[in-house]
Image (tube, rainbow, N blue to C red):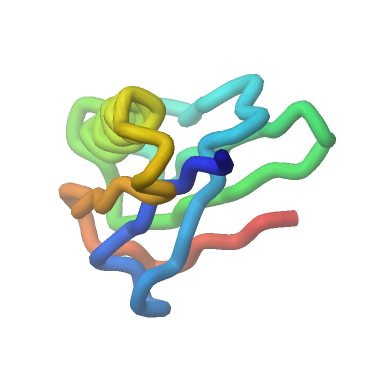
Length: 92
């Protein structure tokens, strides 16, 4: 069963981020505006928000991924409200 994060404050309502096949989660600094999620298939999802405070967006995504993976297989997504407004979520 595939697992996803449902970012509830994304500009596109109900936008999902895959939690399957994640190999790295990163941010450039404690105040960066992007968090990147790298996948084993070579793609990257970039979440852009207002400037973070002490890695708060990074931490929320990491915690959300842990919670999503801990939920029942009958719940394919886990809702997450990020601490900053989301500007964009792009997978490339």
